[in-house]
Length: 157
Image (cartoon, rainbow, N blue to C red; front, top):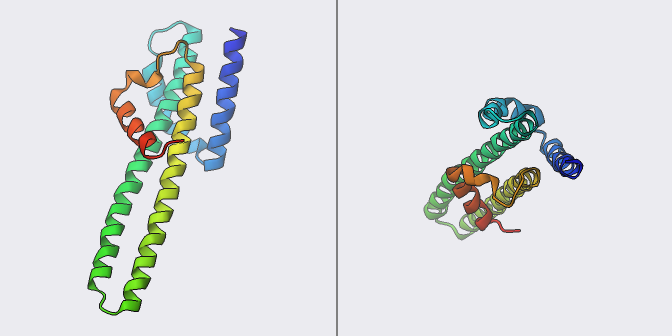
């Protein structure tokens, strides 16, 4: 158990550092307390605490997956709008400015999605470090796992 405890402490340090970096600690922890109690169930006290932490982290992953999806939707709408502007512009200089703006927005979008994917990966790594065995913790949550896998494929390490 001392080794497991040290692993949990390291994992929590990673998560806290990431939360502070994203300025999201208070908001996410309050949103995730209900999910944490759902995961804890009727386990021995030590396992229940680890599962409670896992529940909080799962809630955080859920929140960041939702942020990712929201950013994709927002960008798709903005991109379609920019394309309409490009198509409607007759003069070459105006069209070039609109194309440049569209490319700038695409770059910002990719950077934002990459940051979200990186944070989800950090949370995933931290939760996996706290879990016993080789089984991935997300196997219990197939819908979440499918979404996270898609994100990780789009933004590999």
